[in-house]
Length: 140
Length: 181
Image: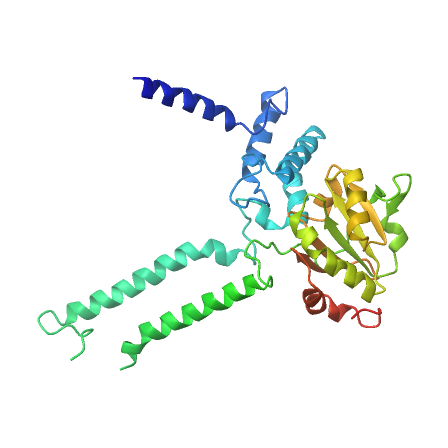
């Protein structure tokens, strides 16, 4: 019982450590929602597998401040994203746009499926042609 | 016959590739986290910031128009900057291209102490206290070094500590006739 109580107390402690941003960035829900969405869509460049909303790196805090100020200045989401991609490239976006440079990235899953299906079809067809004979893949 | 050797050949080819990549990483010539800067080939961001060495003065990139210069982003809190400092000193001595420092998110007093102790390779050092100019330059990890052409275009960028060898390899070809090595 005490063990469970200790565990509950510890998890209660942990939940507070998850909050990076203390307090809301905006008084109104609409701009706060845009801010939350944008910062979760932007990659922290220092710790490259976190968004700037999740990271407590100094640069992530600076970028959150930039986003907050740009929203406050009435900039659109597109303008804010292009401000950041002009400086850090498409890598800063978790959802990179489809351009000539990223077409391979976007096409890669479909290409891999095609290659796998193609290879599997070849093997199955070849084996189905010799149902009772020795496996053509086996030597000798 | 070839299919018996194909797996071994594929294994050796992959192993060779991994060994090559690890060697380049060890030499500081490959950084898997490096992001290609969209600034390359574009006009360098301009800035006006207070000087670290003399807070009553301003460092203004307009004063550098028409000449080639180097921008080095550093901080006293940055281990890699300490590591490259002696190389920066040597580069500053060997070239006529001015090195402009951007002291990133740092304390002025600490920065002056650091330069007094380790030497000052910079022609001018700008204090970017809140990191806004660093964002304009797309900085994400100090030390970062940029080379700006006399027409104001970013020619080259190095992320991570410089050495004299890396300097010659990456930046040397732009420095012909500039008194650089």
